[in-house]
Length: 152
Ligand SMILES: [Zn+2]
Image 1 (cartoon, helix red, strand yellow):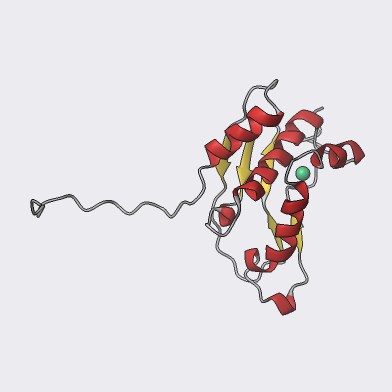
Image 2 (cartoon, rainbow, N blue to C red; image 1 turned 180 degrees about the vertical axis):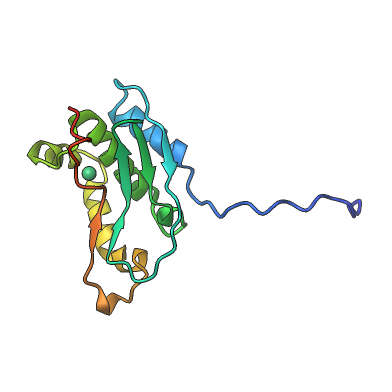
């Protein structure tokens, strides 16, 4: 084998485990194909220890863009969980900002809804950077609707 002495050193790439666009494309294809696909991005990483709440996903009605919390971009997060967040945000696009009965009913149509709930229940403490024993926190998937968001 030739000795490659001047091979360029690869640039450090940010540790990314999940390809968000692929996960979103699958959710779109399976559930929302009659709507145009929405852009999705990882949110900004803000390091904070001992959170009490964490917002795992959000949808912006003005830009029609979804964001997923970058804390989920790790190998321990199952792909179906990230897709459940994307699915939830797509529902806001389709049904509006309210988490009403219709919304919850639609949310349960996601194939891995129960698995996602279960995974969250077991892993929330880790997402919040807390010890299991002191967990008294809650999850906010997205912001409560503000009057400006209620455009539907
Ligand atoms: Zn929501």
